[in-house]
Image 1 (spheres, rainbow, N blue to C red):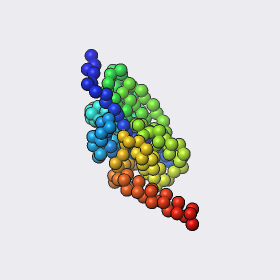
Image 2: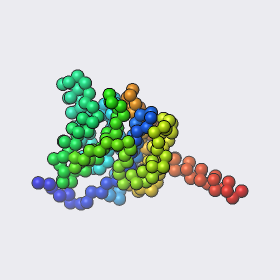
Image 3: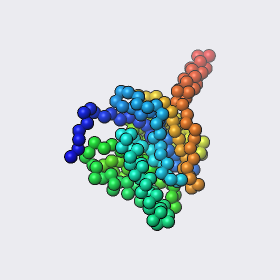
Image 4: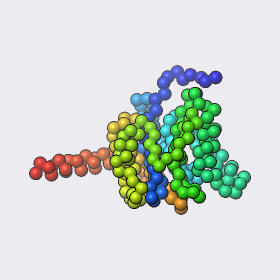
Length: 224
């Protein structure tokens, strides 16, 4: 039996991941919202599972944290038993099968697995109804329509590492500018055959003022 919450729990976030010739990029904002309130401005929505896999999370913060911990445990146990890591496809299948019994309940989990295994880069989306989708680009959360607008325009396979990082930052920034439930900072991970690396967290407020200054200069140049 599912216990009904005494209030409606609203969710909001912006997470994204995409594959390009230099690996996999995962990016997310850091605002945790509870309805119209900012519950925390500095959460971590990208969690490393092991040296070659990270997951972006959206949904209920408590549910996501619980299932990330369960998945880390299961990956580690598999490695100890078999002497090698579970592939990313198999990891997604395992997570999907564990989540499927909770379909129809109020549990809300949407994880995007971004990683690299023996068969190359992988990007797989898994949500709490057991759905499992593999693709080259995913954006999840209330800010995802805005992020997709940027990604659909600029994303291509031949991006350099610098271009891919700039694109991910731009997509999260534009989403947080338009979506009230996303914001504060941007976290970004780059995953290659050598493992993941994390960029220093960046304040989106500074990006906003840089963008505003750039637009002001363009406007002044047109008036001259």
